Structures are given as structure tokens and as C-alpha cells.
Amino acid sequence: MLLTITTTHKPATDLGYLLNKNPGRRHDFDFPFGRAYVFYPEATRNRCTAALLLDVDPVGLVRRASKGDQAMDHYVNDRPYAASSFMSVALSRVYRTAMTGRSKERPDVATTPIPLEAKLAVLPCRGGESFLRSLFEPLGYVVGAESHPLDEKFPEWGASRY
Image (cartoon, rainbow, N blue to C red; front, side):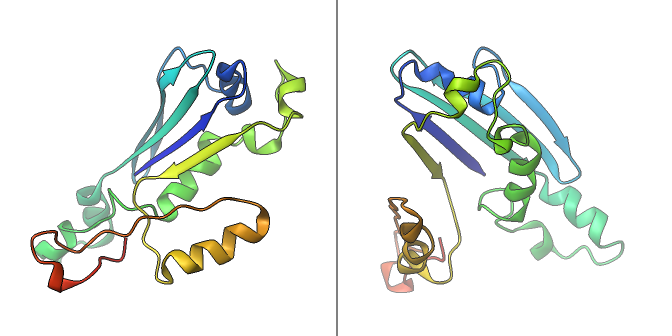
């Protein structure tokens, strides 16, 4: 699972102060379901992107959950790839300080509105794009969503749930 947060606020590297994560190094976090990594693939004065990569261990989840039934379908799933409650848990722990709306080093930045763009790489959504829009647009967010076919070689199979 991948979440990126990008800003073009000047200087864009202030994003590191807001998220309480130094753009100059990788940050690692252990969870019962896997590991999370925060890193900055782009960190310049004009544009800065923070990435939260969540590496879910599906085999470990199955082994902890079921002690006897080890059917293959338990091992083949979308948990490592699609945003889920695991991402919510990681967000709340990794960005706990940022969610308070304060920055010890740069309090002025924390109170300044800045342009942000957040992207979730894969998100299952039963209600589709219209449902996402109904949730976020009334709050002032601009929503962009892209649907993916179940299999590009077999379009007759229809759209996936992502």
C-alpha cells in the first residue's frame, strides 16, 4: 500500500516539519501485520513528496489467524496492495504528531494553509467514484479517481473493485 503527500508550498521541504519526519532519511516502523516506511522520493525547495509505504505480510497474517487450515486462498489476497484498515492504523501511528496540527520546530508553518495533494495507489471502493466524491467534495477536496479493469486482456470481465 502506498500513500503519497505532495506540496508545492515554498519551501516545499517544510512538509518534513509538518509531518515530523526528516526528508533526508528513511523512517521505519514495525507493526504486528508488517512494516511501514516513510521516505521522500522528491524533496526540493519547489516540490516535496512524502511517501508512506506499508508492507503487509499476508503469510504472517494467515499463520497468526488460523492454526490448522492453511488453504492456498488464504495466501493469495489483496492485503499487501489495496488500502485498508491496515493503512489507517499505520497513518495514526506514523503521523500521530502531525495529526495534532502542531509543529514544535516550525509552528508558523503548521498554522499556514498550504496546497497538498494526497494519492492512494489502490483503493477498493464499493460505491465507485461517485461515492468517493460524495464523501470528500463537500469538505472542499478535489477528487480524482481511476477505475481499473479486472484484466486488461479480457475487458468483457468488467471492472475490478479498485
